[in-house]
Length: 116
Image (cartoon, rainbow, N blue to C red; front, top):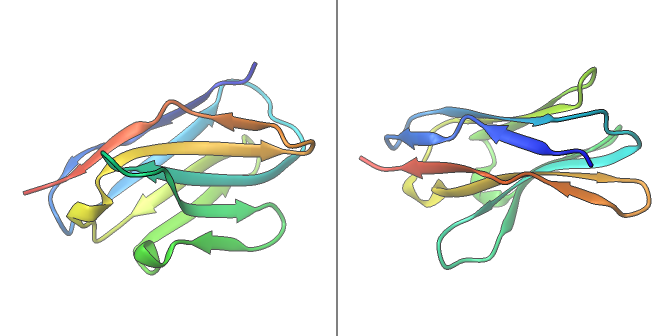
């Protein structure tokens, strides 16, 4: 079973930047979508950004112009560059990979706290 490991979270002041990484523990084949989700305390998990392989990228309205999702094609690593961070960006960030057949892989999350 492939594990996804997120890293790069931490405490940052408003206006600061962080870069999240998601690294699979093994080879993942037939990827269809790779994405980042976040969950704030007491709230539902929400999609932040995603890449449909070979097609479009998606960003939640709240992060457009501030966050950039990217992928390392060779190793299927996923990144999220987060700039101009706001307090409302705080939460646990999760990486998800969806493959053909409907199977999804999730990481365990990395915590982002935006606070002065």
